[in-house]
Structure formats: structure tokens, C-alpha cells
Amino acid sequence: MEAETAMEQVNSFKVEGNAKLTSGDLMAAVESYSCGIALCQKLKISGKSLGQLYVNRAQARARLEQHELALQDAEAGLLEDTENGRGFWRAASSAMSLERYDHCAALCMRGIKVLGDSAALEGMLEEARSRMDPTETSTATEFEKSVEEATSVNAVAEELSQRAVSLLQSYQREANKEDLQRAVKLFQATLQEDPQNEEALIGLGDILDAGMGDIPKNQDAAKKLWLQCNFAMPPALEDSPQLTDCPVTGVQWKDALS
Image 1 (cartoon, one colour):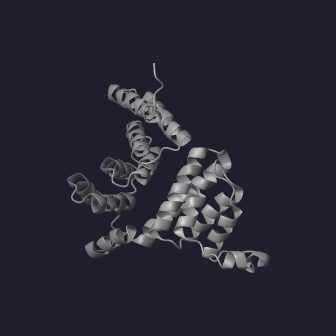
Image 2 (image 1 turned 135 degrees about the horizontal axis):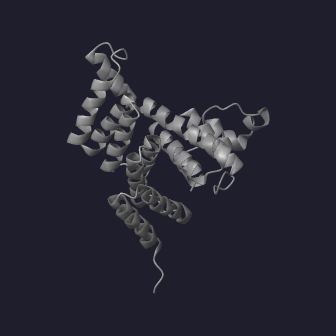
Image 3 (image 1 turned 60 degrees about the vertical axis):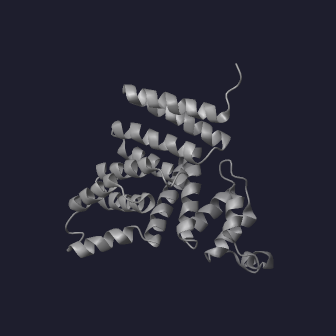
């Protein structure tokens, strides 16, 4: 028998997970999807295939009432495939189950913006609105403003960067490479929203400076990132013409992490 291609191996884990999910063997489904995710990470496969595995695992975890993990998986899936409608639905549903109604509303609005009309997301958005604590917004107008602010560039960037920092801290405690890879993607997504976000620039700089996980050490790139956010550098580095004359561009930090 000819060896399976990498994508065939990944797909076989997804098919196996789907079958387990359909039969109600939820723990086995999570295990199959996890194997597929691990294989994607090992082979450096990203995009829709990896996104589908995350979203499918989110569904299994949601049925196990592991809503925090389901939310994390669904959002990881959206980082891989920003147009995955099921990803928005699964993430918003998990946020709803966790009673994070403002987060749920923000996810619904992001999904509607990306996908266009979505009766399911619009319905969930209305439900999230109805469940929000009335003390948070005194009028309907104020409520609308709060939802809009939750989806503004700075608010989205801040939310993404905070999750990335949390994952990076988790990696530093437990050395789980999946946490590190997700942190990098979240930091990159943060900089797409807000190129000057200090937490993302510092976090990526720390990762490159230490050469965490499978990411090659690149101290020059780390210093450039730190300088871009006016991070407090030692005087010897601040006076270095090589660094100060070479501003960081988006291409540079992406190349450094590729």
C-alpha cells in the first residue's frame, strides 16, 4: 500500500473524529481531532484543514460541557480560517454557555461582518443582548455603543493580545507547544488589528529572543520588535545604529516567525 500523503493522514483523523462524534463517543472524537491537530503542527500544515479540526474538536468539547476549552478551540479555528461560519457559531455558543454575553455579542457581530447575513448569529446576538446585565448599560443606545466598542479595532486587538499573553504564560509553565503556537498566531492577529500593540510586540520579541519551542532564536528581530513599541532597552542597545536605523516591518516579524 502506498504511503498516505500528509493531507490524507490529517483528513483520516478528521473523518475518524466525525464518526466518533456522530456515534456519541465524545472523548474518542476529541482524541482523534487532537491527533489531527498535532499532526498538522508537526508537519506545519495551517489554514482551513487545521481550522476545521479545531472547530470540530470545539463541538465535541461543547457537548462534553467543556465550554472554556470549546471556546479556545473555536477561536483557534477562526485564526486558521477567518471565514469559517461554524467557527463563529461555535465560539459564540460557548461564550453564551459561559455567560460571557458581551463576548458572545462581539463574536456574533464579527461573524455577521465577515459572513454577511446570518440568521443564526443574528438570533444569538439578540439573545446575548437580552441576557446582558441591565446595570451594564442603562439604555438601548448605550448597549449598542458597548457592543460596537467590543468589536472596534483596539478592543479586538486588546482581547486577542490578552489571550495570547495567557497562552504564553501557560507555555512557560507547562511547555505545551500547542499553547506557544496559538500564542504566536494570536499575537500576529493582534498586530494585524493594531500594528503598535505593545503586548504583542513584546510577547513576540520574548519568543524570538529566547527561541521558544521550535521557533529559531533571533535576537536581532526581537530587539527590533521591542524598539518598535518603545520598549525600555539597555542604553547600549538604544544607541546602536544597526537597530535604530532599521525599523521593524510586518514582513520582517512574519519572516522571523515562519
